[in-house]
Amino acid sequence: MQKEVFDQERYADLFSQVKEDSVGHRSTEQELCPACGGPGRDRNYRIESFDLFRCRLCGTEYLVQSPDRDPVDSTYWDGYKFELYATDLVQANYEDRYEQILSGVEAKHGPLESVLDIGCGIGNFIDWASRRGMRAVGADVDAGAVETAQGRGLTAYNVDDLPAEIPDGSVDLLTLWDVIEHVHDPRGLLQRSLRYLRPGGLVVMETPDVQFPARPFVIAVRKIAEPIRWSDMLYYADHQVYFSGRGLSTLMARCGLNVVDQQGMRSPTAKMANVMEHWAATGTGAGKLGPALYKPVDIAMRAIGMTNKLIMVGQLPE
Image (cartoon, rainbow, N blue to C red; front, side, top):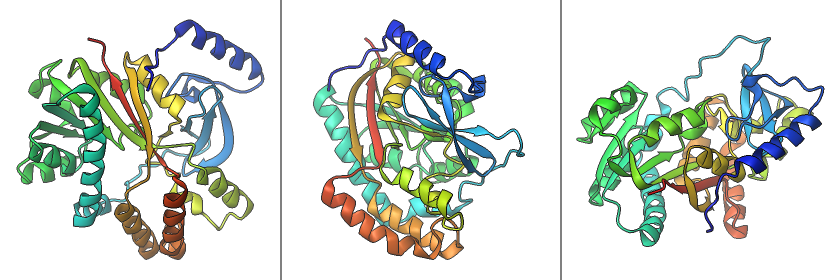
């Protein structure tokens, strides 16, 4: 894939043009796109205490706190996420995924000896990377996740402790697996994390793809028939930003990275089947229809090569 370079002048021209077209639309700093900085448009769709906006420049969607609603502290499935990622089949699915992605990266860029995984959770990736022969360190904001990873004999820290533990410019690879969508300021998170990456080092990010064709469909269904909330499977308050390929590549470029590879993948089958069963059992999201809906959707996606995740690789200049 050809490297993408952030053209500041061209971007400024596009921004000005779109901003002129947006006359009459309220545009506060909070409503600017967290991926590219462009102006957003309210989609008239509520997610808990947030409004859903879409960037008019890159197509990224993101949540903005509604002025007429109190902020909600989301529990992100409470403890279920740990239970989910601890299952053998889900771990096996993800290890196949890691091998596919990193083998491709190393084939193009050479062996990777060290990795820092931001948002490491209970440590599945750093466990796999360590067994693969890499010096692997993880970091997370969740104290329970860090404690679990450490209990498995893995090297993991709270993100606030990283500056004291990891020298700047010391790692070959920085990974953010399904992390960047969870923060309202993804540029700030990425810039803070890049301090640990050596010159010429690589960044691998995975995140849901806003261009997954089911997204506009489930929103339309909810708007037409509010009790049917299939949209809860794809939009929820724990995910603050839903990136387009253009938005994620622009975010990387704004942080000084050259985009060297991009691909689409499907969510691991075992994970999604487990999630659907959980939603059915708890009566949330797709409710009792979840498991019945997922199997035919997964088969169809496989058959036509449809993907719902973005995988993007960036590189710091030497």
